[in-house]
Image 1 (cartoon, rainbow, N blue to C red):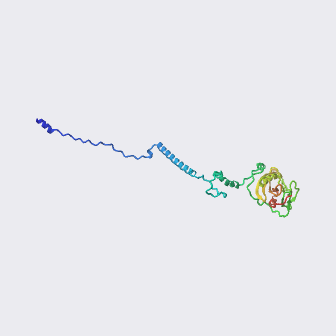
Image 2: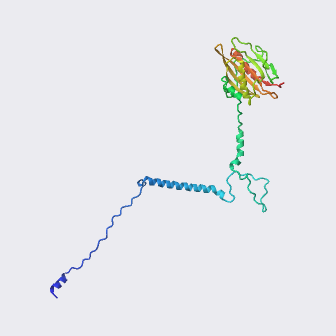
Image 3: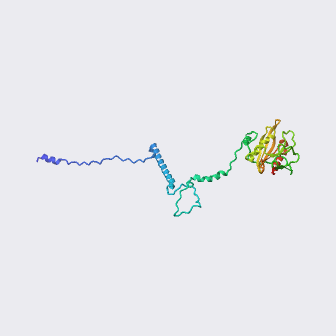
Length: 317
């Protein structure tokens, strides 16, 4: 063998074993925690809308199930008042067959509850409507609306002591007969009449009269007294206007006290007056007692208290 061959064989390099390195993976970034603030607002709104819709649907389903549960059960009825069993209903037995429900049993709860509402409506009596005559009186600028009920106070002057009385059988009342300075006078158009001497400078005369009411009788005795008070303006100076001082019930009637203000020769004057309307059993009309005293005789105003408190009933003719 040639020597160069051996030398080449001895010096030939061994094959190199190359170890390939493991492939490098990119570093895994840490997972970022999602935050609501990173989400777009439209995504948040959609999520809330879906959530609300689901909750509403669930609540509606529960309510529907509860409301229909009783009617779905056999023999279930809508809740309502329980009627007491009739005494004539025979006891159930083998031979008895269930009767079909009557129309009254199937009535609605509102229909069965209506009888209990009737007493409530009738507990407060309705005030009768005012007549055209009363409305016309209140439209009169001389007559104000009636005040709240209040009693007549003690008027100026000394009480007139007397036990004598006048029986007015035409009207059905008895009242005081005053002594001097009062005196009887021609009664027309009244049934009884007492007057005081006319005071100097007074435009009207004090008087106490009684008669059946000269106006139409109204639904209430209070309204009748109102029309009577307006009628008495005919017995006061022209242009007089009423100012109420008392409005109170009396036995079987009503009393109104008032001042009538007017002018005499340009000077303001006034009279104190009162009307009492009293219903009389068996009479066609109530009785009227009317008294008026001008301010020129103010010291006699206390006689108005005496006259009104003296009224009593007598049997009419």
